[in-house]
Image (cartoon, rainbow, N blue to C red; front, top):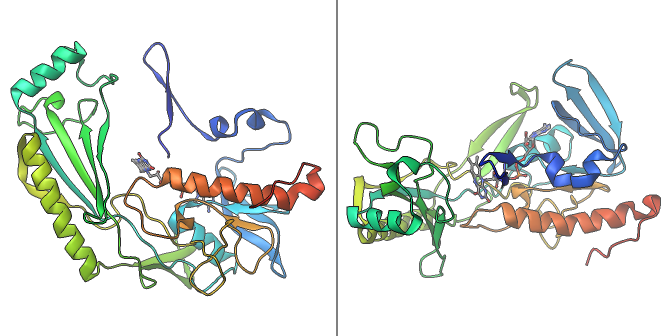
Length: 327
Ligand SMILES: Cc1cc2nc3c(=O)[nH]c(=O)nc-3n(C[C@H](O)[C@H](O)[C@H](O)COP(=O)(O)OP(=O)(O)OC[C@H]3O[C@@H](n4cnc5c(N)ncnc54)[C@H](O)[C@@H]3O)c2cc1C
């Protein structure tokens, strides 16, 4: 993830990978993309980063890689896991975990709407499943009065049968997904236990997570909003909107969050530098300091760009590159 894709003239797709993100740098002979490698820990000497230890998952061999700077960007559960494994354990590590409570619903559009859609797109029933310019998502914006954001999704491009045996045409079904902002708490956290390890040999995780009364009230409001939107669009499928299990939005974040001062409520500064260390950065959804109710990747990218400028300044004396002001 994320789901960046470039359509080719023949209709096939080229999916983005690390090589696409790095561009020409990926082909620089000094750059190595160590795929199939698991990072086991970051190595520090007196708070200063000296490198990482990685394990080649094909051979099982471990190797040390020396580095003057390390960026840990291993997602909002495994970034704190790696820091914990490395002995970097600020008080806020793993805390403030938050994911967006997500409510889903689906409606079948009236026949005349489907017919009108086909008239506009010029498509036949046989072409359902192909992505056309009209395929996409319409957004219902977040407001203070309604602290959630909605996505109305045309499901005509879904390769998955939508209503088994119900005879529902994919092109006629619209999905609704409403994402709520979570009430952020330090107690919501991923906890690691020394001595217990997961299948990769890294510290085992235990998740502590609950909805507050405010969360439950927001969820009820969001359910009402989804019901109203669904009724306005067509005929509901199923009895009522469904709250997915916590964590289902896949937008979990906050576990190495940034903050303005090292007061125990954050793991890194506003340039993503881990407090109390030198040469150690974090990136990804884990850095986002507040609740969000939208797809978070672009926010993480923006914060990473800001952090990268500070990283470049850190490396500048040795690379000879012009330092970029972290401001
Ligand atoms: C089906 C799906 C659809 C989504 N759609 C959207 C969307 O439309 N918009 C949006 O904004 N977001 C979307 N998301 C969420 C999006 O994927 C995340 O917001 C984003 O990927 C988070 O970035 P990240 O860097 O925090 O973590 P990740 O992208 O998960 O990157 C972490 C990387 O670290 C690697 N890693 C972890 N531990 C180690 C280790 N010890 N050693 C080596 N490597 C390690 C992992 O393999 C992974 O490659 C979607 C997610 C899913 C699953």
